[in-house]
Image (cartoon, rainbow, N blue to C red):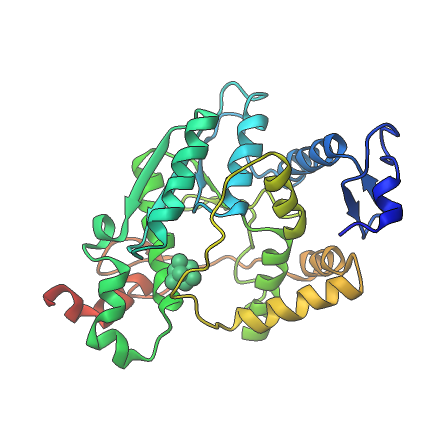
Length: 312
Ligand code: SF4
């Protein structure tokens, strides 16, 4: 929210446009044009600084229909124009959440059409033979004590990987923001897993690398970008959303950043200095053949746990 004084001020950068955004941590007061330009430049710089994308990549952009992923698709489509050898497509996963995912998919369709980006669709039904709503209704799921998100998350990542691999992607771009990345580092610290894997950085191996071009972009700015470039997006919350270990961390970090602007950038810097990735010994899952650090991967473990779903 801008104060009445800020609303009358002129942009710090071009000195001509009316202020629409106040970047509290840097003190910048920006007009619409300068906000969009600096936002997009930062994403391009993030990609260059961390080597997230290669000039000839085939990029699968994971889109859900929410503000973050559709903003990512929008900005990457612009950046892609400077890299004629690179190709880009959107990939989306229908978990099987009636009344929720169907609406999100409409936003995805609308934006890909507007941007002229090809869309690859997959679903839990296609990848695992069973939609999420059947899984969470099954007696074995109910008996497991698991939250819907604990099953949905790993299955969605796997479905995305399969679809990206089939479409010959060389990298998957996800819309994790600065806020998400710091939350993940903190979660890893609490689990004693710091250094077990990089968060949103490119690493080569048997799995298609996942990168986060919004690594240096606060979530608040992503929301504002979606708004100023006129992207339609889903605002409805998933009916299965549950409190996870991440929820209190997210709340704490959001409040802390509000009181102490710039803290998220400082935290990321510290994590990058102290978190050194150790080489992981990847095995091949004995059931599905996908790379895993265990004998049987988490996805197979989860599917086995809810096995009565298949016989319902
Ligand atoms: Fe899946 Fe949970 Fe996200 Fe809903 S909120 S789509 S259940 S991970």
